Image 1 (cartoon, rainbow, N blue to C red):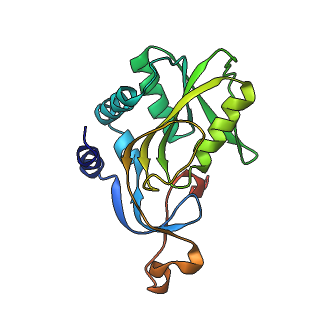
Image 2 (image 1 turned 60 degrees about the vertical axis):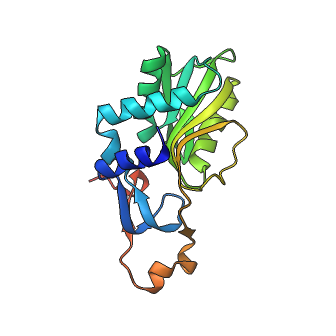
Image 3 (image 1 turned 45 degrees about the horizontal axis):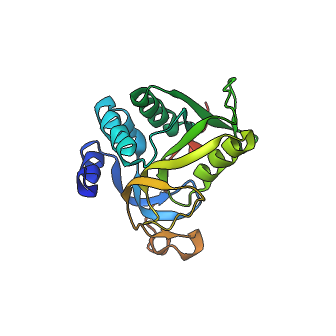
Length: 193
């Protein structure tokens, strides 16, 4: 699939939003990818997972690992299509860790997957959790790279969609200066009732 076809899937799902958004990274942006608008459709996840698999240069994968929450869906579908195991990391005391008795070994070849990256910090945390076990990371599959290719991780990246989306520190945000209402999106901004 071409990037425009992938972007069209996000638009069809209502997952590509415009406005003034507070990102997980703390930056502000005019655009937001509401990944769960897309991930709620198994047919879209199936197609995009197949695209990531097709772009891998090494077919050797024993375990697919993603961060909770959106990375779980993507990791599961890629693992299902490859016929391998999946695992996920969760935040514990602010840091991504393996929980729920997921066991990886030093012999496992791991594909790390992430849904949307802006700075790459969550993907880096997953990488560090996998490296802490000593497993072999063969690459990082990404649905959307909002950095336009500026993300630098120490493993081969396989983004389906690269977008050059301007992100602003809060004190430099033109949307704040225009008094456009700020929307907080994403799981880190949810509160339990």
